[in-house]
Image 1 (cartoon, one colour):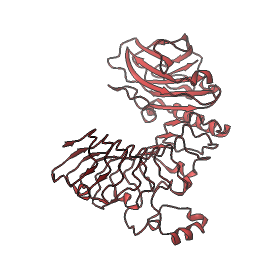
Image 2 (image 1 turned 30 degrees about the vertical axis):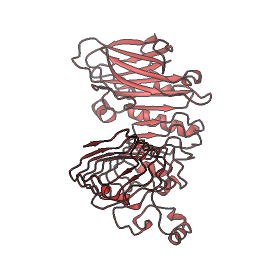
Image 3 (image 1 turned 180 degrees about the vertical axis):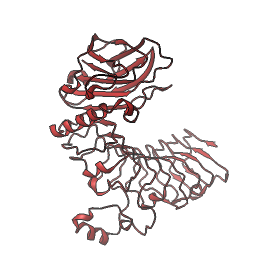
Amino acid sequence: MINLISCEFITILPDLCCPNLEELNLSYCKNLIEVHEPIGFLEKLKVWNLTYCSKLQILPGTLMLKSLEFFSLFSCSRLKKFPKIHPEMNCLKTLNLERSGIRELPSSLLFLTGLDWLSLESSELTNFLVRANKSQMQEEEDIPSAKLRPTCNSFNNFSGPTGFLCLTKLDLSHLRIKVELDSWMQPNYFPVLTDLSLASIGIVTIPESISRFTRLLCLNIEDCKDLLEIPRLPQSIRTVDAQNCCRLDTQSSSRLLNHFREILEILPNRVGEAATSFYSEQPQIGKRQYLILPVTEIPKWFNFNHHQSVGNPVSFLVGPKFSNLVVCIAFPSEDVGYGRKFDIFINGKRQFAKYMWGADGNYDHVWLIYGKVNILNPSEKNRIEVDVRPRFSVTERIRIYVECICCPQKPKISPASSMDQCAFYN
């Protein structure tokens, strides 16, 4: 391992003559400009961190790092060109190009067959992958059905894989990509994609092809202020963040709400398929299942009219067989604007934490959160507490209204309410 973090006087990184090197940390070397070619051939290198190397301009022309698993060029704002990838470099799992100055990606990036997470957020990327020669591009543009579709024939001298076969997380937030999404948003190109972020990009509609992403769980489209339409989403979807999608049409909002209604109406013996556990030793902020939508009121089908409570925080007791929790809060625009933090505690232990950042303009939002509750060492009475407060305040709270259903093991109620559920309103 070599750790050169924050070494201000390094401008060029020469051959290190370290064939057994596994970790190289050059983060915050703010005057580093060039990395020499031999670094691109360190066969045992597993971790390479170049985060915040803001003056970096030159990397090795080709990377053949056979063991590399993590590579970060986060905030390398002057780096315009990404190296070519050797076919044997197939161990890379995480590639972070967020806030980099990279304008285009080589087609050889598809050789990264083990890639699991790719972030291009706020980068300078203008096209997803390097195109073919100009004459071939013109031929494709003359054929409407071939709108820049990313097949193997679309790339220069490329005969490798035609998709990111292991990629599960793709972040395209804040990009200025000029091509239409449907030109490369094809299921066979991302066959195992589970998390997709399109936040803050200037899209008007989401491609119909998204319905064929059968493993997609999370869709982030917050701050897509021009977005008008969301088509039918795949049945696998469990999280949608549409905060500040202020132009979204009524039909799309209703379609989303109905999708989540179907999730909540899954029979009790299949609830494990619909909701993951809230519980974790270290609750991950924002990693649970939820829907944020700019609508003015909680849907009427969410009105259970059973146990009621008013205040904040709100707490109530449930029996040992209580298993599923559904939370729904309507935020008026004046409250959303400052941002809110939402916490759920079970028997005094935080199970869930989520921030809702400020909304732009006078737009109300509804926030629906749900999950399976795993109560450790359950007793006859288990206390669940819900707390909502401003993001940067430890004392101020908003008033919320709570409704709760705790059904017996064999409920004798309508199918739409056949789970043990709790609903919260302001």
